Amino acid sequence: MKKLAMFVVSGALALAMTPAHAANVSVAAAGLTFIPPVFQAHGGATVTFTNMDVTLFPHTLTSDAPICGTGVVCNTGTVSPGGHASFVLKAGLASGQYQFHCNFHPNMKALLVV
Ligand SMILES: [Cu+2]
Image 1 (spheres, rainbow, N blue to C red):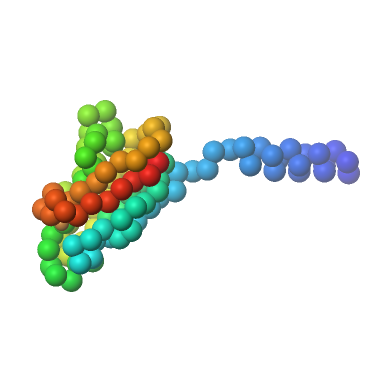
Image 2 (image 1 turned 60 degrees about the horizontal axis):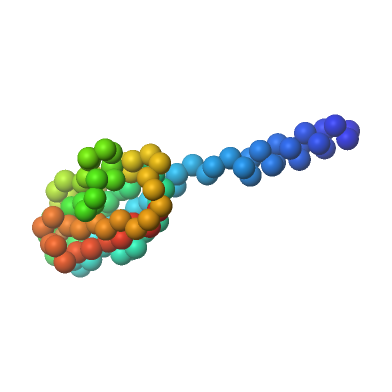
């Protein structure tokens, strides 16, 4: 019985020490604004962008820096109202803050916190 208890405890510790899977995140556009304007994710996470803009503008979610791969900028491409697209952040992306914008509306900004 004591052996079983030890096994359970060490199993729980192993679970606690296992890095969490990269949580996937969702970002939307509405009213020429990204929602939320600041989002958190780790490298390897999938970022899904949905265009919920009732003004019927197309949008993109595009990173300023190449953080989807070596020399690869994250870019959903053009997403029409009601549409969605996703990309995967580069695995092992360094901690920091990364700016995103919309290719059609430079004033639309979002910030990724890793
Ligand atoms: Cu836009």
